[in-house]
Length: 192
Image 1 (tube, rainbow, N blue to C red):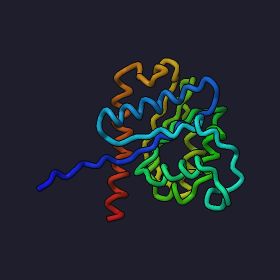
Image 2 (cartoon, one colour; image 1 turned 30 degrees about the vertical axis):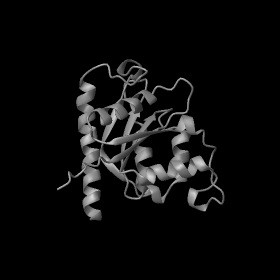
Image 3 (cartoon, rainbow, N blue to C red; image 1 turned 90 degrees about the vertical axis):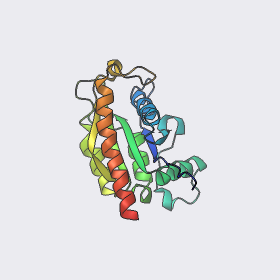
């Protein structure tokens, strides 16, 4: 009897900041390495800084001639088993780049497990972002994971390459990712 291949879930990480000197991307790099090293998921980072999307005037499904990178982005979200959003907090809210792609998609978010990591230079770890971002994603049908990963003082919490400053970060990540993977498993069972 041939061995059954263990297929890992597909997770996309949306790195939301497009600012010069951004620091939240460090957390996206950390999660990619964490998921791969622990053989939890296959991972792709969708870095909004690299996409350089224009401000969208219409949802993707209503666009007559969407750009190829827009279609590719939407497909990666749609085909993934889960999404981790890593977002900075700017003045108590999340960046326009994230709102732009949140509103671009619709069906792609439907019943998609989404976990949020909020990042800031301050002591509150971006927690002011959560209410508005949760509501927007919930409103368009995403399945919001009831766990958060706040990162205060990102400058000292992670190196530029996404290496955490202490081992407590790994333990928090385990709990955060466990909640996300529970949601992935639950949705797969519901679809069977």
